[in-house]
Image 1 (cartoon, rainbow, N blue to C red):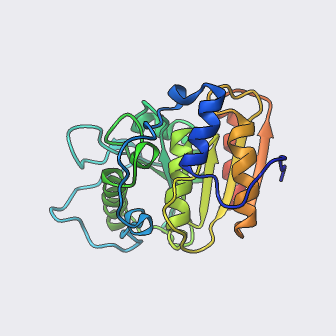
Image 2: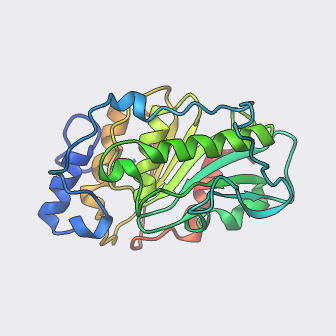
Length: 269
């Protein structure tokens, strides 16, 4: 793990993140909300909690989830539907990774970093899509996107006998921030959190102690590493999380070798 000078106590939150990016002139680049907007005053911990768990009953009304190999819309709605990738080599108790897109992205973008490895490792990949141009807690507070993730998970858990010990959440950019927020709030569901180039940790409470993998490019000019991961990682470690940190030579991207390192880090092969 690499630490940086100038860290302070407590996980990097949106308020500090906004201040850092404002000082760097980069606020508009990452889709964050105006800090003057009215906050959601419901308890953050309850807003970020997911109900779906392996073995969940079917949704009401039921959803017919595709179980044949390939990439399919999940069928939860006509607009910004989630996508599910089912590998050809799917075991009887498969591993599942929820993959979250970045700002202005969609479900296909969420799948992209790990899709080349899904067949090789036999991974189910579930990619929900945010209701807006980025995830709710990035701009304000947890809300409709939590429901989307929860319904998507419930549908997949009802269709597949997912191994409860092999469920992870991953994301890139804003999706990485959201993965950290949801992952820490639902550590009893997600044993692993992969955050490719995150910006901050949306506060959502803490449940369990998932392992965390954070890779970040040293030349990232969208979410500069000094204001983000070099602040986030030491603070997560101080909070008791087992964090694996990887800096790489690159910009705001997920290089194939870093995606492979993340899947290796899961240790599910």
